[in-house]
Length: 165
Image (cartoon, rainbow, N blue to C red; front, top):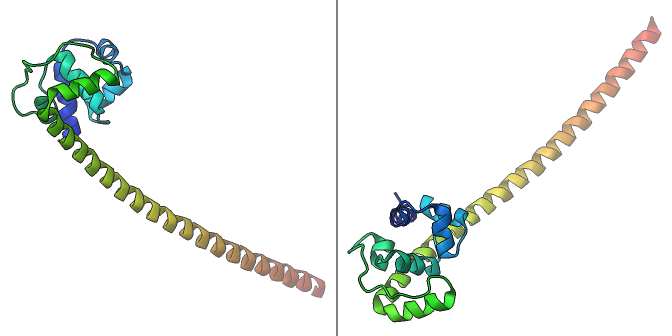
C-alpha cells in the first residue's frame, strides 16, 4: 500500500460517521476532492491537511505518517478554512509542522519526479508510434500503387486476349 492510500485511510478514519459531503463542507473542499483523498487518488494540499488536523484534533505527525499519538492535545481552536488561518496555524504549530511539511514536500517532489519520468517515457513512445504510423502509411501507399499497376496490367492483358478471340 502506498503513502497516499495510507493517508486516505487515516482521513477516512478521522471523518468517522460524518458524511463526505458534510466533512468536505467543513474543510471548504468539494465532496469529490475528499473522495479522491480518501481513495488515495490525489494528495491533499497543506491547507487541507492542517484543516483536518484542527477540525478533528489529530496530530499532524499521525495524520501524515501514522506514527505517534493520534490525538493532538495542543490543537489550537480557531478558523478551519482559509489560507490565512492555515498559514497562521502553521506558524503557531512550530517545528513539528515545519518538519511534516518538509516531508510532505519531499514526498510530493518524488511523486512529481516519477510522473515527469513517466511523461518522458510516454512522450518517447508516442514519437515512436507516430513514426511507425508514418512508415506504415508510406508502405500502404506503395502497396496500393503497386496493386493498382498490377490491376491495370491485368485489365490490359484481359482486353488483348478478348480481341484475339
